[in-house]
Image (cartoon, rainbow, N blue to C red; front, side, top):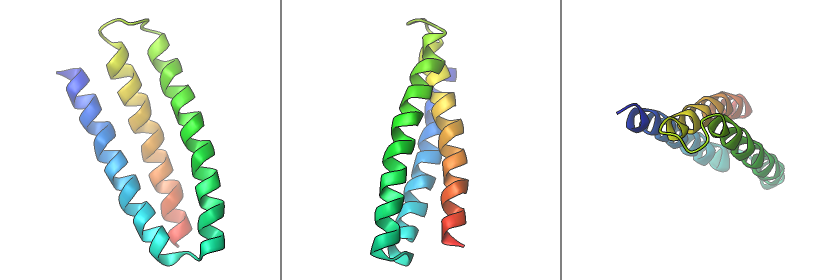
Length: 88
């Protein structure tokens, strides 16, 4: 159950990130969006590294998916708030 709940938490923040992203695409100019896209690609790569590292602590154990989902949710939540600042 905890694996499912942690995955749902991540999905909730991921949906929020996508909603903010769509608002930014509508509001920012092309040059600003291109810079933000480059930043986002770097953020995604770093997020994936950190999520993998969080799961490695459990080495294919039953808690690995939960640890990865919680880390992904935490990082995505932080990113949502960072992106909201672009909209201001």
